Length: 85
Image 1: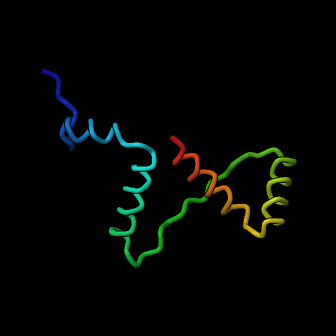
Image 2: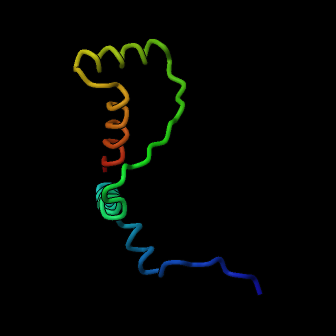
Image 3: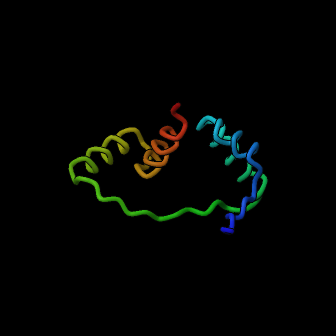
């Protein structure tokens, strides 16, 4: 008899989570973060991306002209992508 992997959640719960939209997932995670980490600063992760120099220069320039840090715009792009349905 083979060992079954540990199942932490019911099949019904897992089926429900598969039906969530990206917006619902982000909303759940944001609400969870607020409750679980109330009063604590959210951790960030430093990542490394290899970007064509001309693309990065143009992106930085446009961000500068709009008065926004380009790193913030990258985070906004990631969030927008997650929220697209």
